[in-house]
Amino acid sequence: MQGFLLQTQSIRDEDLIVRVLTKNQLKTLYRFYGKRHSVLNVGRKIDFEEENDDKFLPKLRNVLHLGYIWEREMERLFFWQRFCTLLFKHLEGVHSLDSVYFDTLDDGANKLSKQHPLRVVLEMYATLLNFEGRLQSYNSCFLCDAKLERSVALAQGFVLAHPSCLKTKSLDLEKIQAFFRTQSTIDLETEEVEELWRTLNLGF
Image (cartoon, rainbow, N blue to C red; front, side, top):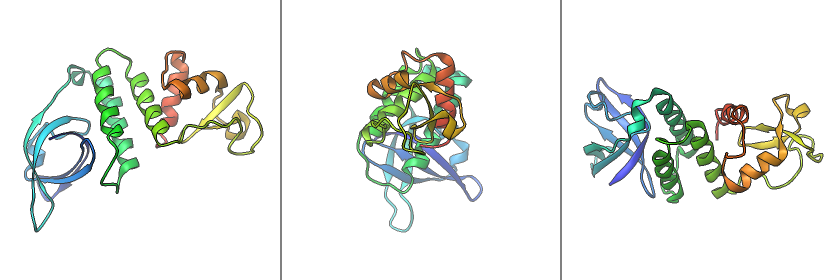
């Protein structure tokens, strides 16, 4: 079985509880002496076996790290791990999932070696927002309900508002709408990408 590690939690001295996103589930598993295994870090893709335990959590067994070349680059790894942490907070408490969450991470991980990490994670986020039906399609400010003009600001969840209402940096409405439609950052400048990343850090 394969999955992405979204969270690790220390238990006792060296044991870990880990949350692993598989194709259709968010699994909570127990690993004895987990702290001794460097592979058990947030964001890692692993192959593993699950051993049921009638008295406690299922155990994580026979772990194999399915690594990527870009994991050696600290900047790429930082953005990837941050995205995985935000994704876990969004999915926490859910057990069964659509495969889009695993597939989006899998696709993003394959792109990270060649593409800018911020652009990859933003496109992943837009893909998930689109799947969940949360990309804003109406053309009004969520704070005052008045029509949006050429400049907009983004709140948590990429909800649109007037810059004067939200008191944050303004972005080009047409570019943001194109990003929503295509889930691609190709038309966005570096400064715009960085602003979207700051907004994403507020949470899913």
